[in-house]
Image (tube, rainbow, N blue to C red; front, side, top):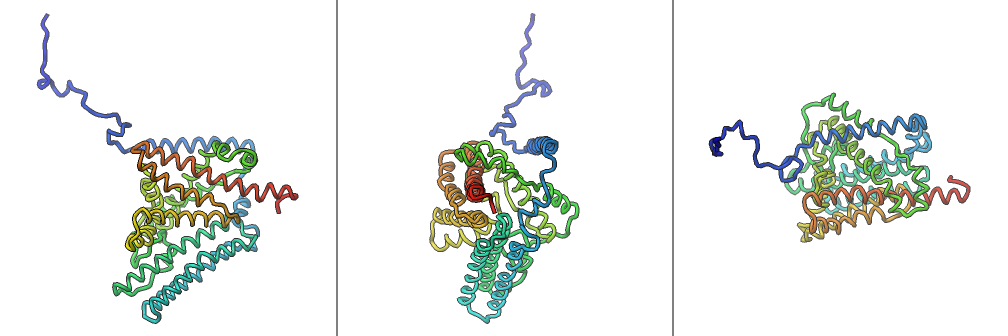
Length: 404
């Protein structure tokens, strides 16, 4: 019997079917296209929610009452203080515009202009707080919406002030586009924004459909009683996934659907409202990429000016987190009309967490740590507010004969 030995170099390519390669799901493979997995997650999410929707529909009937939705924002259709508060915000817009026009033609000095802007910006933050705390008919949702508008307006007017000052220093004394800027999905002012050539109706309608479809009212009444008698961290374990899914839905609804809808309507060309924060391997990368409008504002008007003034990078980053913690607390505690430090503490806790993840974790482990902070940390902070609000308004109310 003869044995035929073939040298590797003489083997036909059609007989060789193996090569040195990694599995696609290994990080060493370099494969990054997971759109099919993303579509699978969307399909599973739709199917699971459809099943729950049908079960609840058959068991409880229609739970989402349009009147209930409206009542989240207003108590009396003839008394809408939150809406009036938003309308009054035009006073601060006009004040900023008038001040810049006076500065552009040299009618007032830079020092006087800075003083007027500082007063206008300070009142922009303080005025809505006073109204929300004093007017009892403002609901928490209505108050949060109004304060959100004023917070965005504060950041926009601050950017408007800075950019026009820079333009005057470069002999480009122009103050325009303010109302377009107020409605544009950005916090950073420019004299000329990039514009898209036309409004795409199909794109606009898709975003509108997504905005409407994403609306839902979380049912938290069943979770109130356990929070009263159980330890908060233990009670929150069963709420982590639903809370996290609601956060993801909010992210898609606001940063993709809503901001793209506004941008398309205004033909605003820069659509980078977020980057690939889901691939974050550090806490810092997440905060730099999940909310690009705020990140650009902080970098342009807060962080870089601090560095130019001689502040170190670490102190600059800490100052940014401190400012973010203030606004988180501003947008939560004031509408709920109860001062609690949970949002502030949650944001400041990101500093040591960011250091730990960057120092000891890498790659997939760092990404897993970021996801754990989102899935576990946020529900605990939210449920702390839910618990305190329940104790303050329902348990004490029931002890005195029921809530007002």
